[in-house]
Structures are given as C-alpha cells and as structure tokens.
Length: 102
Picture (cartoon, rainbow, N blue to C red):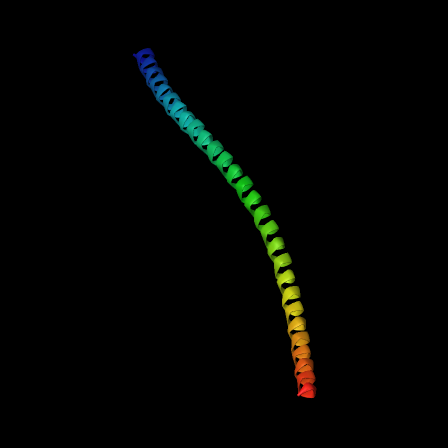
C-alpha cells in the first residue's frame, strides 16, 4: 500500500515535471520569437539612424551653401547700393553740365 502511494506520488510529480517542461519550452519559444523581433527592430533602428545621419549631413551642407549664398546676396546688395549712389552722383554731374551748357 505504501509503495503504491509512493509510486502514485512519483507519477504525479513526473506528470507535473512534464507539464512544467512543456511550459518552459513554451516560454523559451516565446523568448526566441521576442529576441528575433527585437533583433529586427534593432536592425531597422540602425538603418533609420544611418538614414537620419545621412540626411543631417545633407542638411548641414545645404545650410552651409545657404549661408554662402546669403553672404553673396549681402555683398551684391552693398555693391548695388554703391552703384546707385555713384549713378546718382553722375546724374547730378550731368545735370550740372547741362545747366552750364544752357
């Protein structure tokens, strides 16, 4: 009788151990799937980071070009102002010469 009880208890423990092993296998599979998903996400994130770094470099180059163009526009505006002033002086000189000729 005692031996039968022990055998029954052992069978019960064996059954529980098998269930726990199945559970652990399920957890392990789930973990592997999640690790794969995480790995894919890391790869996508790294690709996105590389893309953003590339865009950042492009933007830096464009901003530098824009700054150069702004400086050039400012130079041209100053030259334009100087030329207008010179034109005004010449027009005044021309008016003065015409007055003398009349």
